[in-house]
Length: 279
Ligand SMILES: [Fe+2]
Image (cartoon, rainbow, N blue to C red; front, side):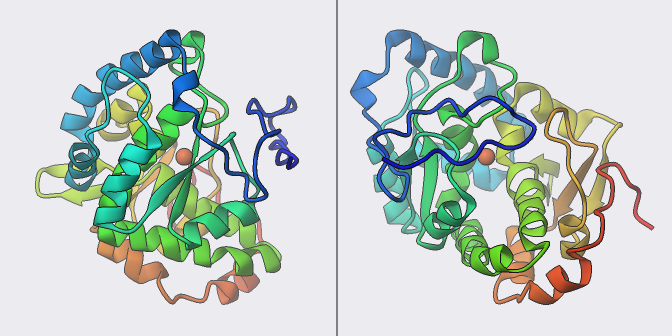
């Protein structure tokens, strides 16, 4: 048995998942046969209302991943089915976890092309907002892009950057902002306009529309240092999104980049506010 990771400070209650059967690397069996009909129905509700929206708003690479995975619309997918697709496309696989895992464990999984996916699904009253990620967010939001070779390689490089961030003052916060803005809330330019690829957006009905249509948030060109120095809000739609020209741009900015000089230069400084305008 492993200890659950400490809950984020904004969330005084304990984490929801059952960590009692987790291995040392926090993995568990998905135990797909234990999902109830009601739990599959929650998946179906979330899936059906999101699938039409993403056809309009998601990046083509994300939609290609959704098609490749061919996940069930009517129930929680079996991770082993997705793993056959991932193995054939990029060599990644997903591993089942009880919920959030400690940063060092998370980085270790990514560095070895394993993406941790939470096994439990939200309750009916939580369709629109959830404090901890569940299987819908983790699977529907994150797994499709793991079929994309460039994005998948970026994710591995992100995991490989983890130990140095943990060892450098200010590093973890800066690396976390890169994940927040470029994995959870990223936008990308396409021939037909700006589209969404971030998992936090694409697993949220409201933010999928807001991120593209609303005049309120600012949409800034991707800038690695700016991203890593910009604070974020966890309890409302984003005030700032960063827009990539391509996944290659993100990969090139991060692959073989030593972030340590940036941590040393900026790690001790307060970040830019989430809605700060560029100088
Ligand atoms: Fe996520």
